[in-house]
Length: 129
Picture 1: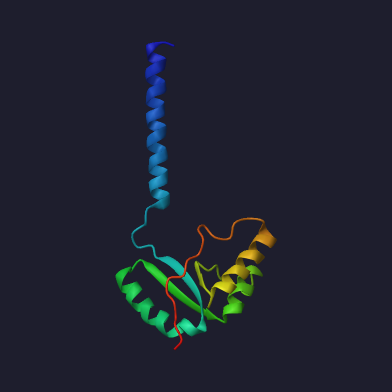
Picture 2: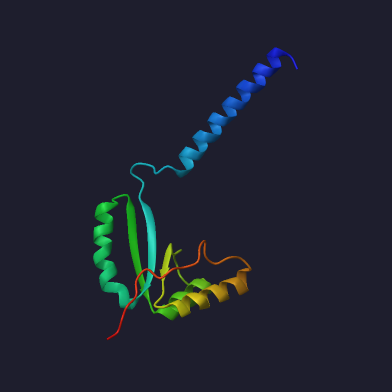
């Protein structure tokens, strides 16, 4: 390989790297003025606290449009698995872990893929006295 060819290939690789980095930055960087929509589907038992939190969330993150949808917890699972929603939820919050297990089993049966990126974890516990 001649010195000229070596320089040409080196410059070509550098240029390709710059194009790749620029494309990735444009694809994943938030675009000013563009609102990102987050759709949260929850059981009706959480309607009041989530509505209060949504106001705080949108004040803190003005470029995020938080949309709350409320369904019965079993309906959350059924509508998601059976694709009956007219929207694509970002977050599902059913009432309990049993419904998450049902969602997991039904999803894997129908799609033969993982349901969750990571194993779901309870973020708070409600105690009844």
